[in-house]
Image 1 (cartoon, helix red, strand yellow):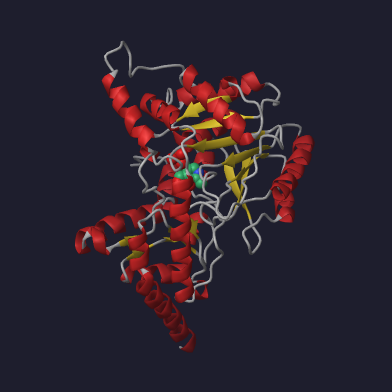
Image 2 (cartoon, rainbow, N blue to C red; image 1 turned 120 degrees about the vertical axis):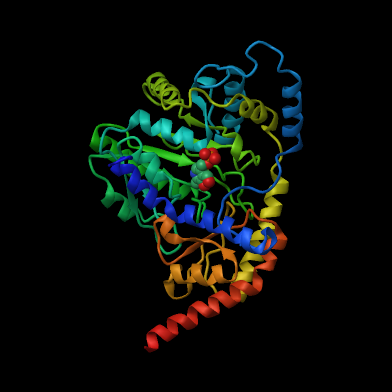
Amino acid sequence: MAVVSEMMKESIEQGSLIRQMFDLGIKLKQQYGEENVLDFSLGNPDLPPPPVVQEAMADLAKNLNRPASLGYMQNAGFAWALEALAEELSKEQGVGLSRFDVMLSCGAAGAMNAFFHSVLERDDEVLAFTPYFGEYKFYVRNHGGILKTVPTREDFMPDFDALEKSITPKTRALIINSPNNPTGVIYSEGVLKKLVAILESASKKNGRPVYLVSDEPYRYLAYDNCQVPSVLPLYTYAVVISSFSKKYGIAGERIGYLAVSPEIEDKELLMGACIMSNRILGFVNPPVVGQYLMKAALGSSTENALSVYAKRREIFCDILDNAGIEYQKPMGAFYIFPKAPDGDDELFIKCLQEEKILGVSGKGFGLAGYIRLCYAVEERVIEKSREGFKRAADKARSVKQDRKNV
Ligand SMILES: Cc1ncc(COP(=O)(O)O)c(C=O)c1O
């Protein structure tokens, strides 16, 4: 008897790579002790939220004896929270946004689901460059769409020809994610302008907007003074999706948003659809506590986080150099996506597990031959993995050599 749908069965199978790693992490930690498992598999920021968040939480707790203090509010969020967000995003994105151009949601994940729920017809196609954040596949499929992947160049920058060839009358959106999970690449303004030119011409040809969905939760983490250009001033059909999960270390509080270009036609209809989707997807409204925490945290400096992660990045690169593993130095975010020795990511992941080091196979991001390591992990844990990486890489190489010799 079919207790679940075929689609969900498939989703569970496809989503199993990160899940398996998560379960394995728990098992290994029980077996060998928390301290002895070096877990680089999860993108959960380990830095505490800014002190203002703790103060805001305490203030909120003291003021709960008002009617409906933790009750429902408008489906887009509190007006005061939307105003504060619009003001902050106007500075960040370089366009004047009002509270009617933004919507708060349950994380960037909730915002992306609300957006695709609002714009996709059945079997519409959404494009994403490989490697990509694996959850996109589900966020698109949840709403009847199909995620189509587009290859990148060796340096993980967009392949514009491949993008043009991937566009069909069914193309509805391109998702970009800069700074990128898992590669850490950041797109320059020149790259964004080329993407926009392609989407502009596709929109004209298709007779409906082909949206540029810019997923930006790592915008605050750009190293070496690298700039993360804004998409809203570049394209009428650009949509920014992001959250405070990573920026302020409040991922579990589920507070994120979407913002549209103030120039977009039928803006009221589009925003109305997204807000309705927020409601009928069952989120109903963004979390109350998250909105208070966001308001308090907006404008807090992220300089300290940037320097902590920059240092960890250097240590990780040094460890990979020492193990003779090829990688591209991340320009932003807190991930690194090295090549597995001889391109065998499954073997390398297995050899690393024998050293009690956890990473995720590139297959989880649509690109085999690589692994993803997350350095939202204390420096001493990264340092402790040095010899393990070397042994695992040597072992993977020698297993491959043995196989070739057979
Ligand atoms: C690229 C990317 N987009 C979106 C999300 C979802 O984040 P949120 O917690 O805001 O839903 C994540 C989380 O890891 C991510 O890495």
